[in-house]
Image: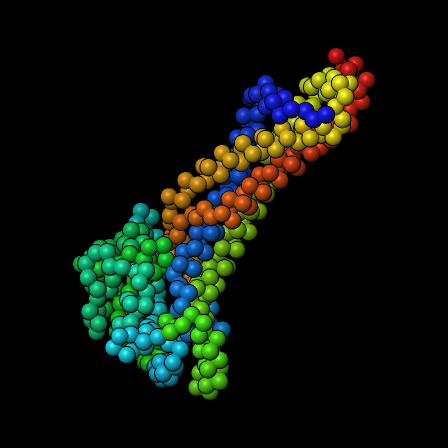
Length: 390
């Protein structure tokens, strides 16, 4: 015979205080666990969204970031002739030659210094990156000391209003607009003319990267093969833009995951011990009841299942509450240093199906581990000894 679920619910309700305390502890642990996963997912989503599936970024081999890369103007001239690269309506390559450097700005509130990426772009960059839109002011004039700032930079740093000036290199540059990069890394950058940045920092004819839009998404391997066989391009490599930005997020996401999960595991032991104590107390208080159930013909496995169901119910209620509370973190965003580029990156918490699935597995595992030993003890009670306990 099976013990009805109403029996488990009634028993949990009878011990409302201990049930509530256990559920609260589990909810807090699950909240931390889910928030860590959401933070890691938010970093990945932000950087992957920065790239496009039909864009290819070309850098110097083994470069970990655009800051460490160098692509010469001559090499770009060779690449621009490849038929795999799409063309604009006026017959020019659908591409941008970018230069990336860093400047320091002070953060609002704390006045701490933060590294901000400055991206010098060519005229094709705006069309190549439709996810970036002008939200205030105007675009900078090519050949001038003018810049536009990403909306996240505008929100989180001092003195970056339209019309104000920012020191870049030896010159003061005027902010003429604000760009909305959405949920991409471009929202955390400053954009200006590539040639002016190159002159200011003495880069000669060397860019940081060359990003192109493929004529066909499937032309990537063909482009890559041609680069490998062209002697003058031997020191360069091509990556799909989304793959490149995913690599940029990898180290930071893994660090946050590792640290957060380590802390969560420590907390989870406390929550599991709390659930175990609750279940052991339940077994001790229901000794006669368990003996009666056995005398009525309920098998050991039915008793085991009943107590496991109670433990899983406790963890499920606490887990759902914790996950629900963590979902509100989706409205929170902040910036920190991206370990891949050493510049500020603004991102938020992201609740994805994979985060939900891992969180559910986590709190069910907590309930199973916390309730298993008490359930085994209850199922192994001797009928006569249990009834004598009265």
